[in-house]
Length: 170
Ligand SMILES: O=P(O)(O)OC[C@H]1O[C@H](OP(=O)(O)OP(=O)(O)O)[C@H](O)[C@@H]1O
Ligand SMILES: Nc1ncnc2[nH]cnc12
Image 1 (cartoon, rainbow, N blue to C red):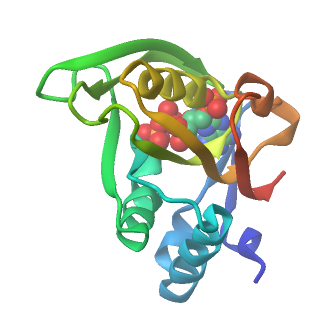
Image 2 (cartoon, rainbow, N blue to C red):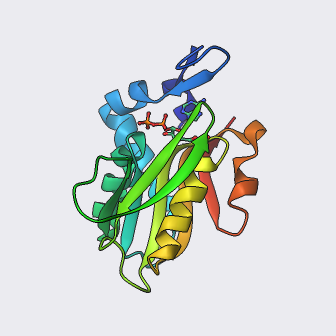
């Protein structure tokens, strides 16, 4: 299955000089959506997962699908000011900006085995911040799972202490 056929490059979005990987054609196709979910699930193998954490907003799509298949809970990590309850917050930077990421303090229990999923690993700033949030709440990051890894940005180096698995590499 050539998933890359369903990922569109958009030049200069959201800023000049960025080549944006648009996954909406892949989400739009029922057969490819299901096959992509299964392929991401295959990366997880037999590990026991208690929670799947997805990053706002494109991480939410497959993180929730993976959570149902793994019989795990889903936890959203959101950008500053969006979550309504008590939050743990972490500043971070990404390929085209910076902000803070937040997680509800009761979302992860001590010892929870956590799978992180996001659509894109670029510089790794987002993923690193999320790993730190989970560990500060007492969770164990079992795998960082991505649909797309932009190898030339070396995001893997920022999360070198974790198991990183990506379906597609550019
Ligand atoms: O590896 P990094 O350089 O940190 O970049 C990766 C992050 O950038 C994108 O999210 P974005 O902040 O654009 O949010 P969105 O999903 O809401 O579009 C992407 O979905 C990842 O979360
Ligand atoms: N080039 C890119 N395309 C899509 N999402 C991204 N997140 C960070 N860099 C990105």
